[in-house]
Each structure stands twice: as C-alpha cells, then as structure tokens.
Length: 427
Image (cartoon, rainbow, N blue to C red; front, side, top):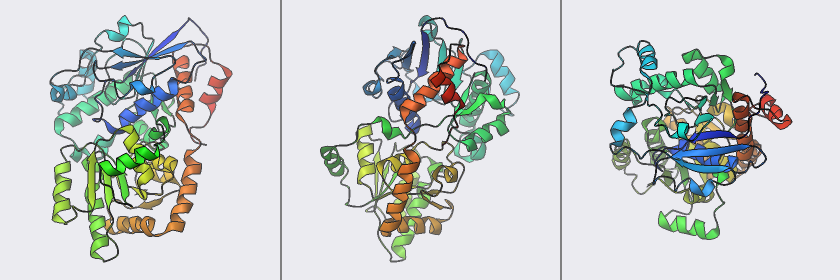
C-alpha cells in the first residue's frame, strides 16, 4: 500500500446509513458498530457523517457521539419496492456492465448522488450497505457476499441482474473493498477479477458489542413479552430461504419423532415473504408449540435473547461474513454454538463450535441435541468461543477503517495507523 504523505486539514468521511430499521438485518448492525467505534476516536482531525433518510435515524442516534453526526439525505422514495430494484449508475458504466451480464434488462440502473455529499464537502464516501450510488469522491464499498452467484434460485431475474450490475460497478469504482473473511476475499477475486490489493479483510466485531448488556429487568421484560420457555434454542436471522429455517424445523421434528426430546426454538429477525413457507411447514409437522418467530427485535431485546437461550444454532446455507453476526454474538454472550459447515464458517469457529452439514437434517438434529443435553461440552465451547471473540472490538475496527480513510485520502499516517494496516486481519 502507498503511504499517505499529504495533510490538508479536516478529513470528512460520510458513511451511507440510508435504511429503514428492521429491513436489512446484519447490515444495520454493521452500521451501528461502525458508529459506536468511530464515535470513540477523538484523537484525529476527522469528522464522520452518517447519511440517513429523514425520519429514519432513531435506530442509529443512540450510538453517535464524538466526531460523528447525522447528514440528512433526500426523503425516502414513496414507492420503496420500485426504489429497491432501481440500483443506480452513470449511463457509461451501465452500458459497459450490461454487456457483461447476458440478458440484463435495460430497466436496471445504478443510482447517482442526490448532491447531498457534494454540498457537504465530503472527501470519502463509505458504503457499508450493499446498495450505493455513483459518487464524485473516492469510495469504499462492501459487497458483503456474492450469494446471487452461488444460489441464483433465491433471486428473481430482476433482483439478480440489479445485484450483479451494482456489485460489479461499485467494486470497479471503489478505492477499497472491505470483506470480513478470507473466504469472501477469494470469492470476490475469483468472480470479479479484481486487483488483489483492492480487496482487504477487516475483522468486524460482534454486533452486540456496541449494545449495553441487558439488566435483570430487561431479561424479565423480554421473557414476558415473547412468552419464552425456561430453555430454548435461538436462531437470529431474517426468514430468507438461504437461512435454512425449513431444515431446522425438520431437525426439531426428527428429535421429537425419535422420542428423544421436544426442544423449543426461538427465531428472531424480520419475517419476510418466505416466512409463509416456513410457517406452513411448522403447521404440517405439528410444531406450532415448539417455534416462536418474534419478527424484528430491538438491540436490547436481541442481547437479552442471547442471554436467555440455552444455545445458538446457525443452519444457514450461505454465509460469507466470517467473524461477525450471530456466531460471534453468541460467543460474546457466552452461549454454545452449532453451525453449518459452509463457506467462511468452519474457519470462523475453529474448535469453538459444533459443525454440521446444513443439508443433512439428521446431522443437524444430532448437533442440536448435543448442545441441549451435554453441559460439559457446552461449557468447553463457551470458553473457546469467548477466547476467540475477545480479541476484537468496534473501536479497533473503527481505527483500522480510519487508517484506510487517511491512506486513501493521502493524509499523514500515524505510527498506530501503520501498525493497524500491517497487522494480520485475524490473530
């Protein structure tokens, strides 16, 4: 990496936080974590703006402080469905990309800046969401994962085309592409033929690390609100098809039908359109009494659910964001984990979790049963998980991003910046 050598006063970085609370799952938690960490960096000449839709910033405001401020964008479009499919770019970029995606529809466009960041003298635009817009300043873009290339059956044709065009365009335009696992980095380099130095692994911290731990009153309130049983398995994830709730339902039915145990399961996360398929399967297997789907929960309730559960099970079919999300959150909360043996997950958990084949209902059921019944195993996994996740926090992550902001803007790097940039992503 080329060392920054110039300095020209305050560096203004804008982070895209234009979302509606509860609709974008883990991506919302990334923004909260970055806000929490950047708010605690008070020893530099930077200011950080978070671009938000007017009237949709309440979810973020409690985590802002220090050099962090809100920057209102233009109002959220009234036709959100259409807006979600219109993912933007300049005509020249669109024409170049369209030729590389057979059958792409001419209706798909990339969004351009509405002028807010230009009027605010932004120096770097950081897009932690999977959507973005064409900016007039250097940008940082998080594609998060290329699930649409691995599981195209989970996307409509229009959604697939929009995602592919946006990802390729914004990756091409970005000065840096942060990812959270080496598996994800290799996947991006392989599919998009990007320069290796452009794709950088940056370890995120557990999302709940930015939240205040629940009080006894918080725990009692959460238990009462959702009528929770004394013991339950917890799976926090929106009800997307790839999250594999269906096989988890079948695994719980398998344990019941074998006469071993009836295990209650609590699933948090926004209930999207695929929830109807999951609910139908729950009814077919006569498991209504065993499953609670809470829908979206607030940060305090999410942390409480981790504290109250017996264990966390993550049966997802695809996950590229290693080191972040429900597994790391469970480690931080001191809960044992069983997860899928796919993509970045085996490297993330090491020997700190049970691993199962997400396509094998019996294998999944056995892993759930072991966490439910083997206290010694659970204690061992909890100790290993805490050791693994205790190395990472949002302030350190924010410091790494600040070092990259300075590098990209060609500002002077401190010795701490240089050390952070040279450090391994995982240690």
